[in-house]
Structure formats: C-alpha cells, structure tokens
Image 1 (tube, rainbow, N blue to C red):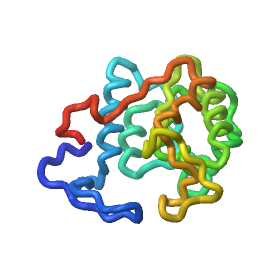
Image 2: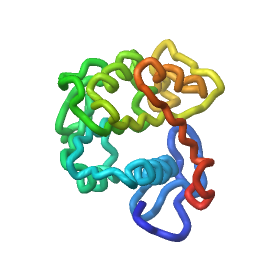
Image 3: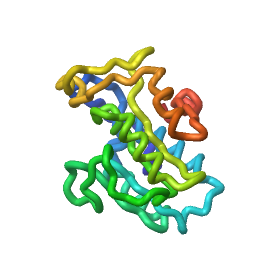
Image 4: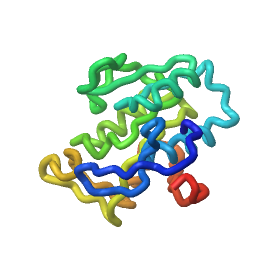
Length: 187
C-alpha cells in the first residue's frame, strides 16, 4: 500500500503466528494489501470524487486513502471513538440509497444478526453501488458459535465458503475475489 519493498514483519495475534505478514512501514497486513488491490481495480475507471462512501470499522491505514478518493467519506462503528457515526450495523439511521460505496472489512463475523446487517447495507447502498464486505473464510461451511469466541477475537461465526449465499438475496451481483487472483508477490 505504501510501496515499501523489503522484508515484512512476523505477527503474533491471539489466533496464531503469521510469518512475513505486516509491512514495517505502514503496518498493512496481507488482507489490507489484497483489499487495496481489489479497490484500485474496481474503481480504476470510475470517477469517485462525486461519490459518497461509508467505511465501517475504519482501519487507520485506509482512512486517508478513502478520504482522498471519495467526494464524501464517512466512518461508522458501534464502539470506536472518533468516527462520524456511532451506529449499529443491524439498525442504521441512514436514508435508503444514501451511499455509492460501502466498505466493511472483517465486520460481519462479529455481528450476531449478520443477515439484518447485510439487509441494512443493501438498503443504504445506491443502485449500482459497490459494497466490499470481506470476511475471513476458515471452513467449507459456516459455523455459528453460541457466544462470541474469545480465541477468534470475539467472532460469533467462522465464515465458510457458503457464506456468500447469505448475500445473494440482497445484492444483484456478487463477485468472490480471492488473493489467488493476484500475483503471488502481493500474497
């Protein structure tokens, strides 16, 4: 994301050790680098300066990038301080079709009623808008936990490959983008 070249740092999150995962310059992890590539590819031929974007659980390293790219950039979260909107994704106060672009990375696996959250995202997204909703895929089939899992950063589910089926009723088109679609140097 910052054009750094060189060795990446190893990380030791609560969920396990990852080798060469974090950029020592901008702190981007593997998922951030892939998401950055995806966003750039999706928006390559779109004039974004007149578009409205809503960024849920805004990562610090994406804030400046999105703020410079979109005409109206707003942030939202239920618990984070210093966001534009302190809101519950399951019950959004925004008017229908308010945003052209919505980004919620690794959020839906934390929300108890993710179907309601997906419905709300769809409701506030303008026609032909884009929602980027990455989740960590960890299994073939999604596993629902009876309570937040302390070993998985309080996830209430472990999304599987079938997770995208939950999006189908709410979005006209769904693209599944995997890191394997990009050159291995970005992995």
